[in-house]
Amino acid sequence: MLPYLINPWVLIVWIAASWVIGLLGKDKRFGFFGNFLVSFLFSPLVGAIVLLASDDRRRPPRPRAARASSVRSESRQRSDRTDKYAPSP
Image 1 (spheres, one colour):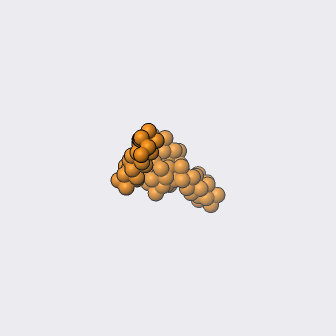
Image 2 (cartoon, rainbow, N blue to C red):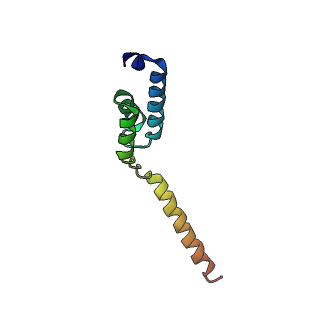
Image 3 (cartoon, rainbow, N blue to C red):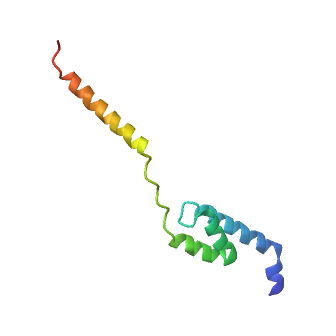
């Protein structure tokens, strides 16, 4: 059994599978490095289970400036509408 574990192809496939699991988990709770490390240290099968069980990362709230610009554009639209119906001088 020992020669099977020392075979370099097993190590290459192990690292490649761990890398793929890390890439698939980059938007998950543990990120790329966490998923890669779990997969590499335990096994790619355990890494895949952790990947499937983990939540997606929460998206950060939109910056305040972006909200303000959308509010400004809505107020501009409202003012454009009121200008259309304003009496002419």
